[in-house]
Image (cartoon, rainbow, N blue to C red; front, side):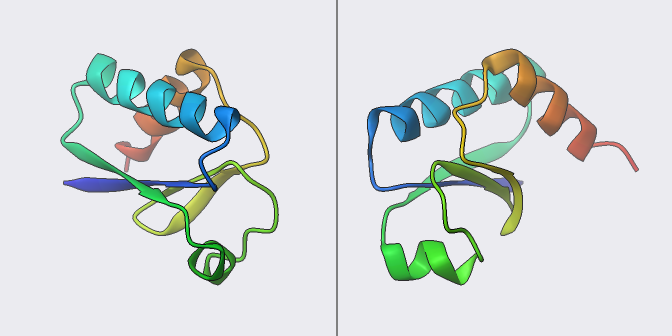
Length: 82
């Protein structure tokens, strides 16, 4: 099971990214858990200085935007490829 981390303080863009990630996971049928990371010290431990950001198993994949469901389907779908 993958863990998708949404890095952000809970702003509207962060919430939209989380919702879009959950929808992308549903569309792809992935076994994944979405975890919201709101602590600034933990966010910076990822090397992220701009939110929202998205990480997959602690590897940052997206920074500074609330990607659309379609963009996330493409990004997360590519994660499953060898």
